[in-house]
Image 1 (cartoon, rainbow, N blue to C red):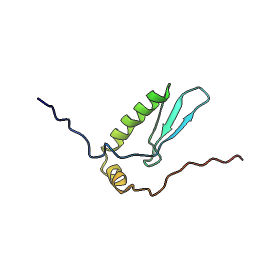
Image 2: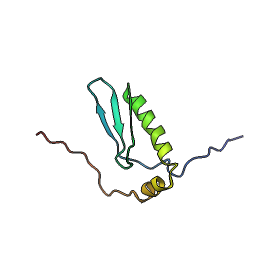
Image 3: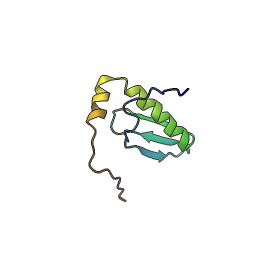
Image 4: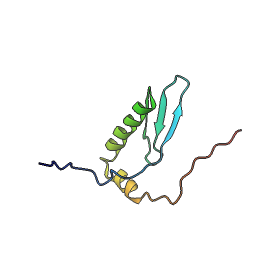
Length: 83
């Protein structure tokens, strides 16, 4: 007997993330799509797991779901410069 899994309609939405390794060796991850959406982890895997949890919490808010629904980038890139 196959079990059906309840899945969110947003399970396949790809979101932009910024990842930096700080001076203490922790990975800091931010999703710029949502205000205040950031976390950290001792490893990259842990930081990515944590940001998924933060995003799930943020998406409990109706306004955040509207932002996600309207997010349709035609191009996304990250550039750096030396100053």
